[in-house]
Image 1: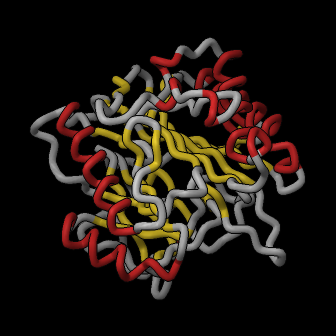
Image 2: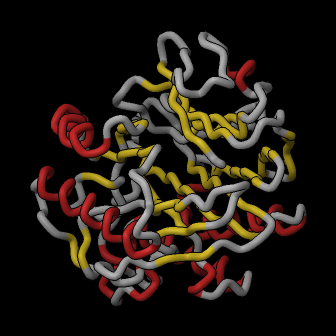
Length: 329
């Protein structure tokens, strides 16, 4: 099934549990290793790379990781570019990414609609029409007041694309949307990337949380368009892909300003969600943590390693879609 491992920045050494990877391998070499579907790159501007299979997302890993490796199966991935999308494929899993230029981010609503339209056009054209996990990274996500906040405009653009594609709420897959810290010295675009397959998965909601697509009007003209998790059969297993999860019960943010309590509520939400999907579900095997304040790294590491060791944990520096949230997992 899909597996996620992490590579340190110095040197580029693969997770020792990922036996298909060679220690000290360069990114270009890793792309041609059997089972490597894609590399998610940190500490690089959020701009399209020259080589398909590498996906820079514009945020740094606070753990010093250079890449996350998405692994699947035992074949060398097929890769290519179609229009403004880059893609990789192994067996029945397809990974696609598209970037929005820094200039186009000035109208994030229209740019998001266009990006989703071309991504879904691609996966439909190649016979992988069912996305089961989507990631969105946009600059300055909390900039703007009220309905003019960048995240709310992003949500409008995404839902407009979904509406044109005739996706119902029950078809929204697991997803997350995070903010790229803005630097005056670095031009940052946006990126949307996804994993898709040939048959539909099952989308799940958390009984502790209101479905995001039913949030009240206070959260913007268009509610966020995602499910809390998606599960599907891949080879001999049925993995569960969890959406970005935070300290939200119902639709309200809880424990504003309290990192420890937000971490606790977030993990409670994840455990409750997993139990509602599959009471036999195991502890998550790969975890990406988005942390608003870099100075909270040690406290977050200590808390999570007590809860999830020996899972792979990568803590990255990113803004969360709500300004009162300190962490998302």
